[in-house]
Length: 247
Image: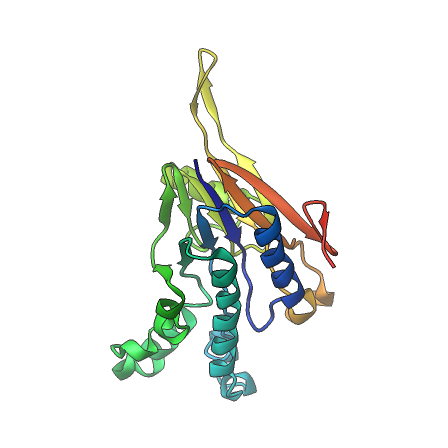
């Protein structure tokens, strides 16, 4: 028996704190016996060292430490609500930004443990396990970020593409879409393979995504549960998570 709760892209400081608080309350009140938590990555936006900001005012904003501290604070919320249950955190393209910046512009600093992202964000203090590679959290299921393969525009398609490549079901983030796709095979009336591709949505404030034209994106807030190998998607709409209202 296993039940995992999946936390999607947060993009701190562009996260939706209201939604984060709702999810924590939902976990505490509605699903009190989770095996553990899976965080798909992009929990910290890190725009300062991104290649998009190179040479612009954003590179010199001086806000990186503040935003890392805010990320730690949000992760601490999840640790508090999960108690002693394991929490697994996946690497991602946004949390790769510091190491990419150092390797490109300050390679002499690359070996410093203090500049390693898991150290910077304080994962050891929160007892959160970091993963550099897709992580098999239970038999036949992998946690990934979603940038490991081709981006598919339909919800769930990116995750299913990875599942077909790897031969195991995949739950991931990256697309900010909440979606599920299947690829099941059978012969002589018997199922021979179950593959799921699950994309976990996001917990951002859409108003903070200034790079979206007219603030318009096919993105969905939500939280996902993998319950004994079965994915359950819970959209966040207003004050409701999967039909349960929070104030």
